[in-house]
Length: 313
Image (cartoon, rainbow, N blue to C red):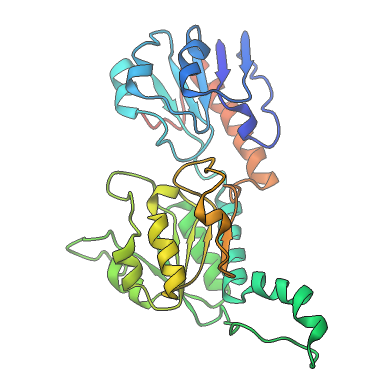
């Protein structure tokens, strides 16, 4: 097989050459205007975040397999792939442990104001008249309420870790749902009751800007927001406004609407002491990366054997 990895440098270490590859093109990155040339002779493409849309796919009649090097596959036009008989495989649940632990770490950082207190140690502590320096009130995780949007592998694992810390967990029903399923809580009630809200749902037309100004205004005053899913789930301007007004006590954002962001992106330079922005790495623990590589290799081998697995098309 002629296999092309369009954005190989998006992994922290190189993906080994698949055994089925007679031609192996591991590209560091591929811009939108380079995709056609990169895949013109390819049988299989691997993409992490490089978009493969219908106009592009229609010009690639030889392409038979797309392996998404992630769980989410919103970068691929699935309907177009079905129309053209292209098999699309993803890597389910590989990063659930890493992302869930990142969420809990963010909860500790935001509820205990670790960023602000870290700065106090260098600025205010040496001049303090006491052995300690007090700033924003430190809140326990125990007894707090965590709202979770999305009950897949990651959301469910976050819930298990949270319950182990004696955090009350609410799973949010779909926004606007007429009925509430067993084990779920109405979306607006979750907003109103949660001390922290964490997002673990896919990006779809229905979830785009799921959290905007209206939703933030209905959140419990002083709550915190965590997003490790997709940047476009939240309105970034609304998050900034919520932080500035105090409606949000903090936010931990591992994803942004456009990645990489502009150098002058306001969230990257905002001085709020309880804003934590990280460069889309919640998924990238060493064990998660190893699982990702193993499943990618298995997806290619299974397709070559005529028994594709992890098919989403």
